[in-house]
Image 1 (cartoon, rainbow, N blue to C red):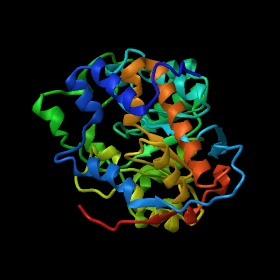
Image 2: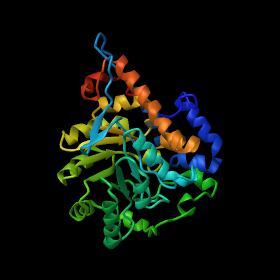
Image 3: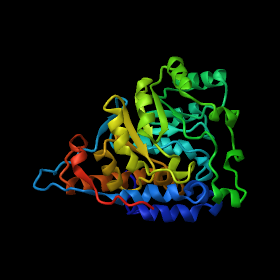
Length: 349
């Protein structure tokens, strides 16, 4: 456990992170596309759901454990794949992976990490998922998959919501391009046109090519969720890329129920997008998510204090989650169901 006296709240960690990096880097990690409507919507939509607390239940022992792809999780919170994390702290994904392992959860490594899959796997103390941007040809992808498998990664997440790179105006106005900056331990072909060509046949090819269970990351409609399970995908990842791709996309927590219904238990469902408090996590679990992924919150922890900041972020989220579970009468994750929440607002923006 991290020394509790360094950071007592999550907002403290965010403020410390802001102080430790340049404004360019902070805006890259924290911003969204164009008007940032999706970014704001992700966060604001959390308040559209309220709890229906149950009382007089024995919650003297709270169990936050669950599983993902059969892997044990001490917390239903994983670290989302993010690129260029070395900008926030020199240890980047190595620190993220170490912190995740310490807290009994999983780090997802991005294709655009400045560390190789082998380096992160050697440093990690817990399971890892490899996130793929399909920039190269089949030969390049096959090589990457072989390396991830050999390094011991436990799943493959294909990102499908980047047909065109989002216009992130905070970066554009500063002429800041994190994609071309810093150490590159492996050569990435960066063929953005290949992302625009991505289709369901690529999903089928990947499942035939790798032994790793496939996760489709970037699902935002019930129709695509159904297609994913029809193609045999074991995990549907509800994501709008943290508001960094399509402006005016739906908040992920608001589309989560329809996607869970469409999947109908045929695949695990995970979600990211605006989840920054323990209560946010509990709402997602009630709406049918197996687990939540955090991106910006983890990045802020990394900026604040490297591995220790990320570990403390996860620890505080766990504390908040346990308190929310106790005060809603939920002794374990297994007890959490849709009756725990109700929609309090059907507002638009």
